[in-house]
Length: 240
Image 1: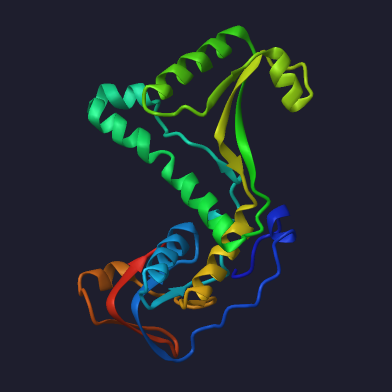
Image 2 (image 1 turned 180 degrees about the horizontal axis):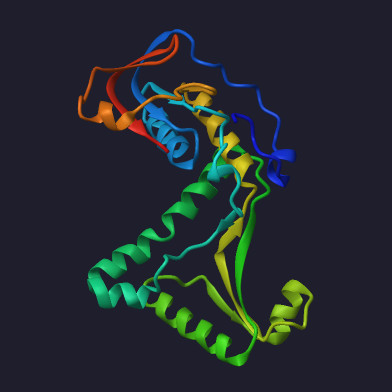
């Protein structure tokens, strides 16, 4: 299967000029295998820095999880920041607390710079169904503020009602640095941005590419497929 699966995001995706399929010999500085967020973001960083970049996507841009996720921009980790501090120390927790915002900042900067139409809406809510949950959110707010997150606002029942027009919630924690996007349109927009910066993006290409194999060979590695040859002067990396 190479086309996008049926979903709201696929049905409402922006139309874009199709990317070619690689069927000839080419060369580049860096070949990125995978047209999801990891591959596209890496390739865009490199293209902006002046590298000759090629992206090979076996299906369509954003075909996998990058084009099918919920689209939330959430500044957090799988563990609370105080748990990270207890396990790894204050210095590591502060470093991770600062890094937590970088992903969202990069996304917002790119949306603005390249005018990516991906329905970006700022802000995210963590809602409480009862007083105990609201107390937990208040504790989390205090914890995150110790690590530099000053964009959190605690909402009472009246304030959350104005946000969501519902009496169901006792309160909420509003993250002004969070947000929501159309995930597939962000991927398409980043692929177009790579082209604008001189990079090359190929769909239905690189199905059998093995970046892990090429990584051990360093520069001047070459990948060959069915009629496809990509000669990488510097590196072949995985964005899968």
